[in-house]
Image (cartoon, rainbow, N blue to C red):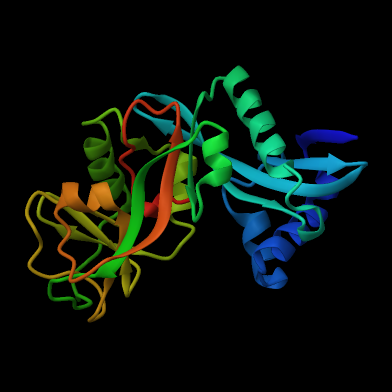
Length: 257
């Protein structure tokens, strides 16, 4: 017997344990993030049960773009002893059907392989890339932007195109969940994670980046081109796949779910 549903509070430890087994995560470190991240919601954690046993899992995250509501899908996996039985596809199809019926008809995910998701109506629309920034990098001694300044700059940018991700107060709490500092740039800012940048908005290319020497950029290829991020080289990290999106999404990997 197959059943697909959201997990209960008492099943959260089992869900976490299976998540760690599937993706080979350190349980102690994962448990800290699992319960404390701002989007933790049992109604967003789904599982497929075979004869009462939890065997496949995934998590959804609510997203709001200018064109409408969407879900981000992550952590799709099946217990190793139950793989290659179609459980992942059944789970994903059930979750997508639920989202369609509850006002979230659009979906996006990041994947290493497309096969499963293509069968469920997803298309490859972009790639996540990473590479060293081809510009001087040095951690500055200048003041950082306040949260109010940062949110105003991002909102002004996001409201210019309906394909851009919008941020409410909970999404900003999620954004702040990872340590990063935001420094002024011409017409915007650069978000620094010391040696990595996943978000930057500017009207002119900065003369230097507030990162350690050798700092890297991590983002969508389309966004990298749109913003004119100078890279010495790039490596492809992930596929960007969407379902029912009207165009290619414009978002930063600082919002990765």
